[in-house]
Length: 179
Image (cartoon, rainbow, N blue to C red; front, side, top):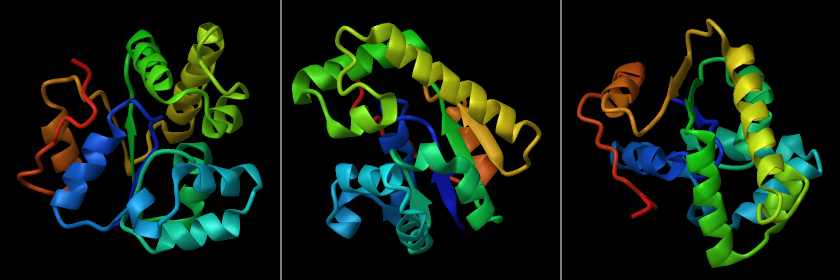
């Protein structure tokens, strides 16, 4: 099984990938390749799609940036893959990314993805990029049988993901949940 999580960070990607890891799937994350997220985003920014494809090929699940940025390529490379788009209310997402930035500071990842290294003072721009991504994903995957869109705050999110993947008993931990 190949599962590609194409929601932006701070939408529940860590919770879903943790659940899939708990179900026995091999998840590409920073620990898996001893690479940090910035190194992966640099591959995308430099259009090193061969390296990204080779990495994605080794794992059953990929999550977080840069994968949401290349969902079309991933669909072409992995025609059997299932795509899960976690979405979140844009204002709640912005609040979360602002808090994350407050804790960790501006980042090169944000610079590559949003064109500005911090959402602080650029809130509307960040929301615009977030909303444009959501609209583009929805348009591309409209009617696509291997696509699920889910908001993890919905009561039935866990069951919908489990049903979509044919995995009974999937349990979503609430990673990085705001208090």
